[in-house]
Image (cartoon, rainbow, N blue to C red; front, side):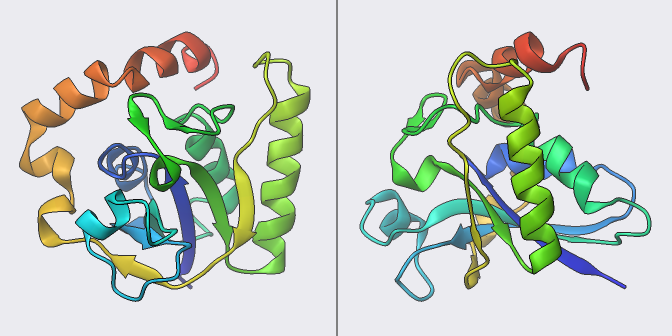
Length: 175
């Protein structure tokens, strides 16, 4: 039985590869969620007028890859203490969130966030929001699987944005 998970982790280009390459992950789609505009465009979301966050919707088999493992992997992709965006991408559309699809996901997300806060790993509190899943709108085709279509640009972006160095600093020994 397939299930859905939705995460906002800043630039959605960097949120596809880590999940898509895992066993039990059927599909990862880049898109927008959490806002008020139906079928927003990338330009509208970037204008910070729609309330949407860049997000990924993951279709997964929970018997192969659990939601708890998805949460662990999600935390390893972001700076959960940054309320203003992610790395060099700034603004509401680049903030982080876990969009839960049922009560079990909500409980697991809250527990995971609490444990991360209590771990002492970060000197600032975890500010990633946990909120009900809202309509998810698929991003334009050129955003889908960007890491595959433009591997050199993707690698340069991930490194240049500061995301890669942050991951290595905080997660190298925990991944």
